[in-house]
Image 1 (cartoon, rainbow, N blue to C red):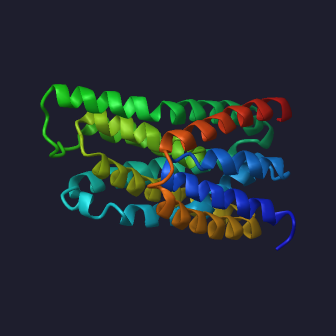
Image 2: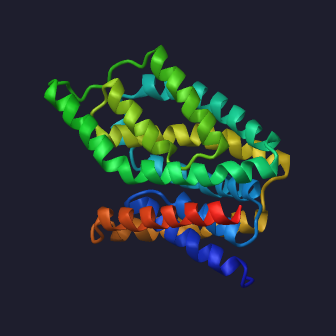
Length: 256
């Protein structure tokens, strides 16, 4: 492994561990790839391809919570996949200079959503509980499908913190089982990231040596994080990643 790929492997390991404990790993890997001199669009596409296998692994952990969620799984699939395809195509046709101008705002906005994740979900759960709603999932409707399509577009284009948006949307739709919500969120990520990753592969935007190293590092970090999750407070990890995200956004503003 070259010295260039060594820090990528380390950061991917840390990102995988962070995702197992509190989420937000993309806020570590994307700025790091840009810092190594990889163009922002290639860095984004490479991260998307490298992290897709992790979505499958994460979803498997929620199989029991998804047993009665067939309607929601079906409702997620089409708008997420179509939105992901559109978002990926938008990224492919976006001029590098234009994306470089937009990406610091995307990182800053994703960081804000990441930091606000816990209070947002907690407020939604409290609201649902105050109305004495059951844990049984309501049926998805046209409004949800429209919102999920937009989330898919964002996920295919950039994607950091898309899961937080989905958790908030599911809470507003009436779901109260957080394990079911996380499982559905991971399924949606498979749909829009899988389509986006395929688009990036055929568009030639993927740095394959980096993607393969990232995939191994993130998988190893995810396995390790799952074993230490009971010993590390998620709030500590969340605060650290939030601080890194803000710093990365400021750095991107000055560099790009």
